[in-house]
Structures are given as C-alpha cells and as structure tokens.
Amino acid sequence: MKAVRYHSYGGSDVLVYEEADRPVPDVGQVVVQVAGTSYNDADSGLRAGLRQDMLALAFPHIPGLDLAGVVTAIGEGVSGWRVGDAVVALLPADAPGAAAEYVAVSAEALASAPRTVELADAAALPLVGLTAWQALFEHADLKPGQSILINGAGSAVGGYAVQLAAQTGAIVTATAGARSRDRVRSYGADRIVDYAVTPVVQALAGRHFDVVLQLAPAGPEENAQLVDLVADGGAFVSVTTPGPQDAGRGVRAVHVFGRSDVTQLAELVARVEAGELVIEVAERLPLADLAAVHARAAGRFARIAELAAQVEGGDLAERLRADPAALRAPAAAGELAGKTVLAP
Ligand SMILES: NC(=O)c1ccc[n+]([C@@H]2O[C@H](COP(=O)([O-])OP(=O)(O)OC[C@H]3O[C@@H](n4cnc5c(N)ncnc54)[C@H](OP(=O)(O)O)[C@@H]3O)[C@@H](O)[C@H]2O)c1
Image (tube, rainbow, N blue to C red):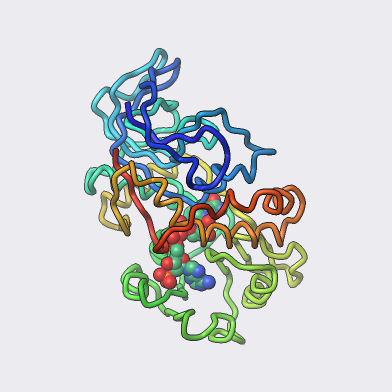
C-alpha cells in the first residue's frame, strides 16, 4: 500500500510518500481502509522528536492521529464491528497512524462515523473535537448560564468549542479574525472580538468570565493577562501553553492534552448527525501532499514550540537549541489555518 512515513526525527523533509506493507489485524484489532486523515500540530511535534523522552516512536513511523475510514478486516476477539462499517478514531501517538491506505487499530478506539458528511471530512473531528469537549466539560466544568471567553475561536478546536459552549447555554465571547468572524458568529458566539484590530486584553479590560479558554499560542505574559479576565473562583483552561499555577483568587489554571474517549467521540458524532455540530474543513488534499502541509505549518509550529520551551524550559528547550532545523526545514509558501484533510 502507499503511505507517508518517516525514518528518523527531523523537519518536514523527513516525510516520504512510499510503499509500505499493508497491515493485518492483531488480536483485538480491525484494519480500516483510510478515507481521510488530518493535520494536527501534534503531528509536527512527534515528527520533530520534541517529546521523544516521553514518547519514543518506532521507525519507520506512519503519522496521522485522526482517522476516518471503512473496516476491511476483523481480528480475533473483536465484536461489535463488521466489514464495511464506517468509523472514526483518534489513534495512539506511538502506533502507526492514518497517513496510509490502510491502518490496523484497536477495535476499542472506534466510534461509528457520522453518516451526514463525506467520510473523509469526518477526519476533521476526533482530536480537535475531543480536545474542545474535554476542555469545556472535564476541565472547565462549564455550566448553563456561565460566561466563557474563547480565545482563538477561529481555530478548528475553537469552532467545536464555540458550538458546544453555546449549546450548553453558556454566554460566549469569542476572538476571531476576518477569516473566521462570520463562521464563529454562526456557531452561536454572543460577542466577537477581532483580535487583529484590538488586542483581546485591551478590548475586554475590566470584564470577567467564569471560564477563559485559551486556544491560541501565547507566552507566559499574555497568559497572565488573560488570567486577569477570569472571575474569582473561575477557570483558565489552555490547550496551548499552560497558565500560571499560582493565579490566586481561587482561579484554577488547567493545561489540556486531548485524549481518545469513544463515548465522547460517539456523542460528538451524534451531534453532527443531528445537525447540531458542524465539521469545518478548510482544505482537502491528496495524502501525497502531507510533507508540503507539514512544511506550511512549520512557521506556526516553531512559534508554538518556542513558546512552550519558554514556559517549560528543561528538555524541550534543550532539544530546540540542539536541532532548530527539525521545526522549520524546508520553508514553504502559504500558512496553514483550519483543518486540512488528506485522502489516500
Ligand atoms: N492540547 C491539545 O491536545 C491540542 C489539540 C489540538 C490542538 N491544540 C492546539 O490548539 C491550537 C489550535 O489548533 P487548531 O488545529 O484548531 O488550529 P487551526 O485551526 O489551524 O487554528 C488557526 C487559527 O487560530 C486563530 N489564531 C491564531 N493565533 C491567534 C491569536 N493570537 N488570537 C486569536 N486567534 C488566533 C486564527 O484564527 P482566525 O481565522 O480567527 O484569525 C487561525 O486561523 C494550536 O495551538 C494547537 O497546537 C492542542
């Protein structure tokens, strides 16, 4: 089969579109014919080896955390799934990913795909949808009537977060630029701040929110200013760089890493099918273009990594100093924004 793989950590140029063995299902696994995968910044982090002390990859590695596809083979001990079922999953980061024609995946990681959208487009849901869900309901404990500021609502995570928060009955203030403003409003945001016109902390000075959800890359100073917008006893929940742990005033600062949860994924899918949750796809490309997509994401990913290193220091900062090319090379024209779905 065709797959995108890399044989060592490095820049986007380590990604090669090549022939790989077609997987067979192990006990408890199914094989899925991939209809789509999507790009996430976590794919760049894994490829650059930034977290190799915590998560070491076996090479060659096939990237792609998000999966949408059709079951083609069933392993021993699997029940509940049949050949032909359309499924979605968030794959484990250290296992072969979905940037291939076929992938073997634990049957326990699967949810049925939404029947109301193109199957490939459903690959724009798992990681960012689960991250939004977990940030709002597990970490912020968002309740009807509460106020929330979603900073970076124009992002893919933000699109889901605005929709889910509005459906919960929260009062949603969202930052969005010209590209995203109308879409974010249509998702149910009550107020939009164009962060490109007025910095959010300036536009909202003196206001307080039960929850501030940080979805934009930021350094410690900007996060501290956003924490000032959290009401006493509220929550600052970040999916990018963490906020200060000693925020005071009873404010909780939480750092979120999205994880697989099939019950939550099935709930997200149910809302898509009910017409309550829109899956937004910014761009659809052939899988062979994945290296070019990583190259276009290099600028923004370098910024995220540098900010994370500023906040964390330690191994991450060391690694960035030792191998900056792993983040950037090679340069590419055009930035990435929103969800890019790739189909074999
Ligand atoms: N912790 C986790 O588990 C996890 C999981 C997924 C993603 N993430 C992180 O979450 C962030 C969003 O990811 P994504 O894949 O959803 O990205 P994305 O869709 O590509 O988002 C890019 C958009 O973010 C908005 N943005 C960027 N900088 C901003 C700023 N300073 N203020 C306000 N909005 C800003 C812009 O929206 P406009 O169009 O409005 O300008 C931009 O188009 C990334 O930093 C990513 O690394 C974390």
